Image (cartoon, rainbow, N blue to C red; front, side):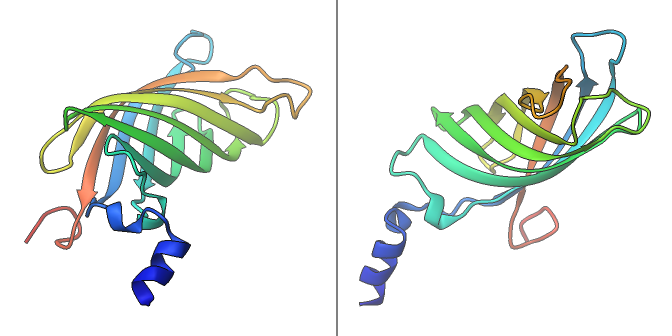
Length: 172
């Protein structure tokens, strides 16, 4: 009875693999297309694996995320979103994603409004122990909520660390 109830509440629960959550660090260039505001950025992210969001397709995984980005100009972005991990040949990762969050300007680029939306794609390699290494390209925009909407593009190198029972980062 309990199993049937779980299947009703979460249709793909049975197909769920035991995938770890991921802690992401990323370093790269903020507004890398435009030299005027180009600067260094650091991103920290936590990507969840929720069994109820597991896809019925083996190559697709939904990963809710929460993160923060800060750049050398003192600006930052706090966000929530979701990635759609497409994993081919057990190693090649293509992951489009979307997020919404709060941007503060400080001495950095004026993006025109505090609410910003991020859309981007990751291209990377997943190792057999679930670590990942790759590049992430994304665009920040306020979707014309403000009078100005200059947007910005970032290109970062990311490293995902699987969170396992041996927290903080290693199996024991």
